[in-house]
Length: 505
Image 1 (cartoon, rainbow, N blue to C red):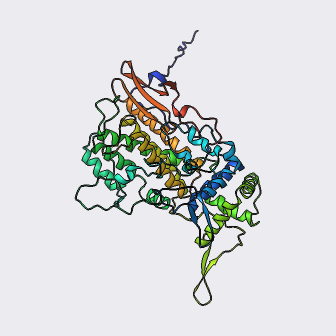
Image 2: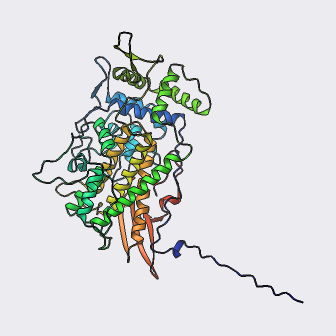
Image 3: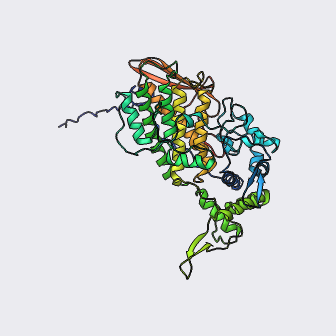
């Protein structure tokens, strides 16, 4: 007797991906995170030296002419010149070995996006410490039109900081009128257009790096949204490759989506293992090591001790200046009540041979500083891509739109850096991660459109990028990326071999 046996059933599973991905299904943009920066002793010494230098010049005017012999006074006796300060940085071995790298290792001027690239800008440190070009490396922005100013972005003056309610609420949809978006942006970020003849609530202007740090802490998202509103109100043309469906509400919706993705990516980066100790903690440990009070051992302590040896050997005057500056400010000191109920100012539980702590500034939470720099990089890349940034100037000015967006990104990054909550290498990485995220958001937006479309922009490193959408039949489409005319992988698909930074494209 034979038993009836059912035939084996073969099950097929369709895997969606590649060319078969539906046009309305966005690509995965959350798979890859950049490698966390790991600094050797020489790189760590250079990073801390940059932060010390920025702290020392935090009260210099941003828009005044400057010269190498300009004097910075610490107190009634101690003083130094900008030439002296830059020479101290130049003596560190990291800067002398990494003058023209792949994009990750010269002073804070690395944040200075150049329309012609930054190779020539990076090479300055090889040629000594005797000119304005070297001083430009310390300021991550563009010089003024006459070559004498350190140059704040015009957007900071066109869209001054304003008080806002800080109210939260669901963002309008892409189908809402622009008036709804304007009210929502004003309520959540404070960004709004000034009305002629109406008294505004503009706050004090930005005159120094300290002011810039306070502005970015209190009004971090006002400038990007304010710039977008201002450009739309002035009728700035959109990129010629965009289709007619792009308008103000569409841009606001894309920017809001990008901001949400940037916040999510920032949270993931903050939670990843292996994150470096914050600069404030590093500075405190350097202070203890200098006094012989640090008892910790291990690889991290050995690296930190080697960094301190390099700082003492190559830039001792910088350490002296920051110690004198801390003495003047009372950094690391406490006020305790005495027996009579008064205060004993200047008390410290430890004796500091040299107080190398980072002076207090209007600071962010250490995680927020990195996240907001990433957010600014995302927003500025979106504006450069959607508007005709490579061929247009700001209405009523002779300023190039793309360069102005780069300058605003650099200004905001400097404000974050002045808070001493992040390292310069993290700030540079966050800007470029924001740029990569913006490209992915634009990729999704273009794939949801119908018909051919393209976007062109110049990235933070002077490379020309082009996003091109081509239909592939049956309602499918594909968006490709070109860098300087050559097809390239999307940012999340590759990393740089550089010691600190990951790839942009």
